[in-house]
Image (cartoon, rainbow, N blue to C red; front, side):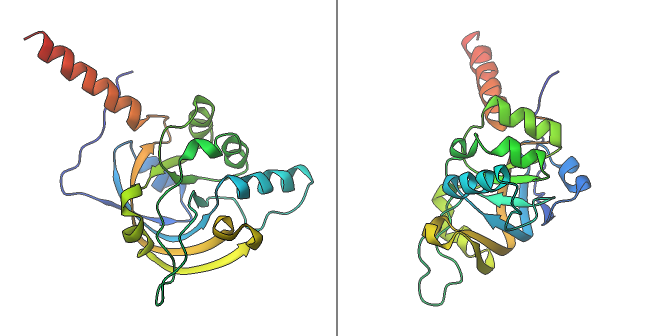
Length: 200
């Protein structure tokens, strides 16, 4: 099946978190999104603790159903800031844990970089979505945060789990609920373009 990045001129999709099934189904790899609502932060140290808590049969510090986790360890807040610079963490560090959390109802992940085939298959199976945030825009992304509360694992410092309220957080859909991967699509389109130019 041929894959295409959906190009929508001058159109940005605004969606709310927690995510609905309808919102996720409307997204395609390559879409530009402004996300508002409640999301949670967590990197690999926090993910490890979440999975260990599940293994012990414990209740997690937040309900996973329909939620979004942002892979971020923010810089310390400056005076007057609610949240520090919030550039994304490389997502493969969470790949060992993501499928289990997706199976339990997690619907969105925000990070940067490739995901494993196992994670992509889990995104498809669970009707979820993987968003990309731009690392170089960490300070701008941080300004989208309206509220930040530490809710678990404060001893991890920047890697503690925080509950964020965000407004118009700028994101790109990297993997949609059908498993279309923007990285793979982009590579294929580049190779197709190169082959056509080489043949001229």
